[in-house]
View 1 (cartoon, each protein chain N blue to C red):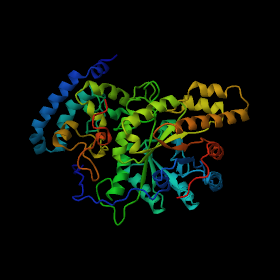
View 2: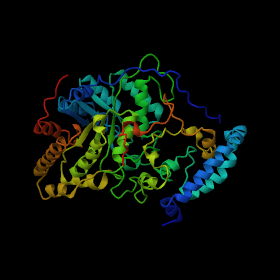
View 3: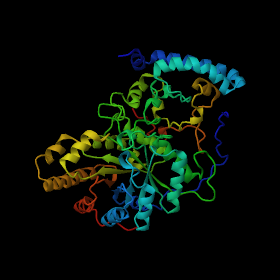
View 4: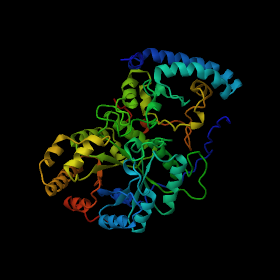
Length: 326
Length: 169
């Protein structure tokens, strides 16, 4: 083995002046509007019609659309491919990058790949461990943690360098960089400080885990506001409708990092299938209206897990449709 | 409670041990430099693996950040996270992947204030240099080869940059 050499930082780092402000989500946030992101789940099989159906169903309801990256550690059509389809349909995709499946080479390649298609709004996260998915026998990558992926994207944009410190030829990508945070996972005291670390790394907006425990979220936001972090990063609160009591129980017991309080289950208990759906929508809107009122929340991130048809209804019930054109 | 857990929960002797080790390693720098990282590592790895293996379940990443994380090894995290816990930590503070294991970050952050390095929880730890795997971290530390900032960063940054000046207490 050759002795590792020190990475060389360029003597005079370039300042590209790029900020990701070309992203539609950035424009909405910069205009002081309440932003809406909608989650799009790519299908499991290469089903073009299914993607087109979902595009048709959701188009116009969000300022940007998160395209998940092998959601729940199960194989899906890639985030990049579906993001390109969204872009071609005139929607702004938020392409997700988990640290689970790609090393820094793969991540940078796909970031630049998206950039070629004008997809510059990105979201960096650790990702569910493969043990939860359909290939538990695979080798988890985790070459870098999410914070270092954020940092890498920031340096690609601001300084036009790869993670190794070498210059990106000709042109820098103009990323608008997102991150995630889960206020419901211990250690609660550290979560706002970790958010501060992500801001220093380069994150410009965050999307939170699905919120049902509003009190816990309020505590988190109070600390964030006390530290003044809400002025340095746009916080989009995660909300979503639950389709049935079965889905609620699954989320409560099987999904890592989810906090589903008992009152949610009680509300859904003993109702017919249709009534459960209606109650699910009502709960989502109640939670959304409560979190909207919390200081520092600049938008919503709507995740309708395996129930995309509910998104238009939620947006209309919340009075967040139509979206501003900027 | 095992002896390992007891020592980590009461880390003062571990802190003294680290301070003494760090002092020795700084003195040893010319020796290691002369022998080269590879050769020095072959020798130093043996005691390091035994001691740190027993005390911390060391994973030989060769860029040790035990003292930045309350004397708790973050490489025991199934996701190898070096910058804080993931969003999957269970409500009881256990790991999402290994339900019987405490999250290394939950433990590390509990223990960090008991060490003189409590402030280091705000440190942006650089990514792992996987080429160093199998070297001795006592040698890489001594030679300044561990935890080098990548890209255009020249020094390691801290979250203090965006936090109020008066501190976060």
